Image (cartoon, rainbow, N blue to C red; front, side, top):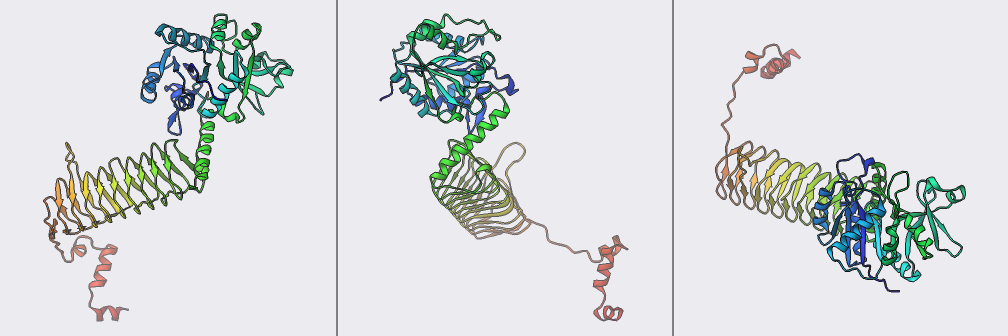
Length: 488
């Protein structure tokens, strides 16, 4: 059966989330590189509703700003007072009416904003089940081994939903029921409007509960159906940091499983965290304790990790990245990065390059086959092809006020412990002597020497540090060979 496109999807995202103990609204907490609300919006978009409505309340300014970034087409409704889920839906419908929005007679879907594991396919199943049952409401349900704390779904003899009983109000027989209410529904809009005004706040919380709509509809002899979600993790809501971590782990496993099924080797899935927007080609190997964040892409044959974090990076085929933190960087084909390397935004490594141990590179381009093997800082630089940057070289790019660029030509050899004082250019094929401080351009093919001539002061240790082990060693070393042999 073809799905009937919903007239609207209303996402409830107004709750305070006090148990999160956070200044960040609950629905803006992040899992796999996307907010909880962002995951739900993504699932809801599968339904292609005529209107997507998000009800906001607590932390509304932050939530509204976030929605404008990720779903600018969504309609935002403010629930000024958080008086319950039923009240939130009523406020949303009143707002739509006030905007002059035209709602068709297609189903209305209500979702919660803190269920990031929810799949679009499950929502399609919900809407199809609702249409097939021709019900006034269809409840998305699931079964739990331990349903404690959830509202129980009580069915009638025909299999329809008779009512939803909250934990505190349930009898012993009702508590034995393992089918629970997810808090998400599909409604016949006209019939929902007919009972929303009859909701009361006569309960311990003083709120209008949306589940009470089920009993009101049944009292009007309307049919209420259920759509069973076979994977109970999909409806897991988040109320505290413990649940956030638990859901994040499930999302991690879901993402990793998909990539492994697509041909990616993940050696230790339990310590590998991959954001939902990452793209990985087959035959990539990911070693333990690796995190891939943002829109990172990794081409076939690459090896990432162990102990590596890539944030919004592009890694080309057959590259190797070990014990590295990289952000907004491009790593070329067959390049080798690490261990203990820091690639900052704007770093572009060409093909067959090397950024080795204890190297930091920022806003710089390293040409094909060039190497920065170890213990160096490269900032605001352009390095040509086939060049080698000696150990402990520093690109001195900051004068205390402004940043300046350094240009290294092709096939340049920069000696160890060179200070390159920007702005400066080292021409093609040029060298710098080890230990130099280079303050002027070095022409192509020249060697730049920027150090004072060495001067040895003989017997300085004997005069200035007499009686020390160094003095004794020097005295022994300076004796004539025959005298030293006689003393032995």
